[in-house]
Image 1 (cartoon, one colour):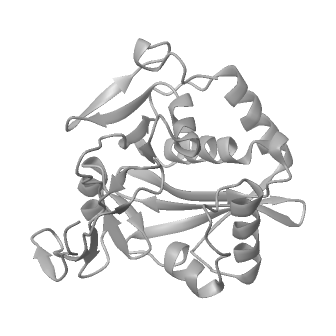
Image 2: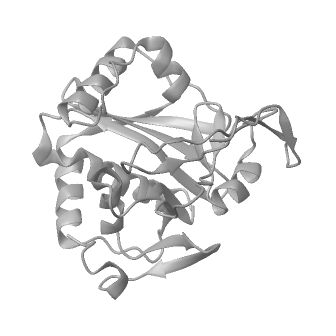
Length: 256
């Protein structure tokens, strides 16, 4: 494997510093090698500066941006919803109605708390998503989900007085970007993960935004493949956003 690339300044608006670009074991596909160059903008991004980064497939983690550049794998496909074209399935409509009836949603700034850390850990370990790592602590949570280089906010979902879900969301000039969602694993019937995506679609429509970015779709990774159920959607394939319509042969197994 090649050595990390650090300290290289990329010309952009604003400029970005590449701080790590070493290949690592893929966290999603066993036996694969991942390369996710991590880039630190020299200052916080304004909404109009973040928009073109989303359009070319960038994702955000804490203060850093990244885009897959894996040596021999193209399994990761950036995916987004055109909210004007999207039509939820019957099951998705039912989940959204149930969530609207049962849950109370708050919108607020990123606020790391012990309560959220505990819920995050219950989600990771209760749903078998921990991949062998230890429980996260407050400092680790803050660097992962409590800091940002762009305009970010939280959606907090309450069942009565109980916090049962949190979605971290970025906002650009014309889009929202779903960064991460975690929720109580003992409430599967509420479908909080699905509800959260539909809630963000509703926010896009209410705020006059065009796209909801869902991150990366990976067909052979169950924790990432679910995103294909939101149809129609678009995927960034060979540098072009390509529409995947409902009933498409390209994703006959993607719908509910």
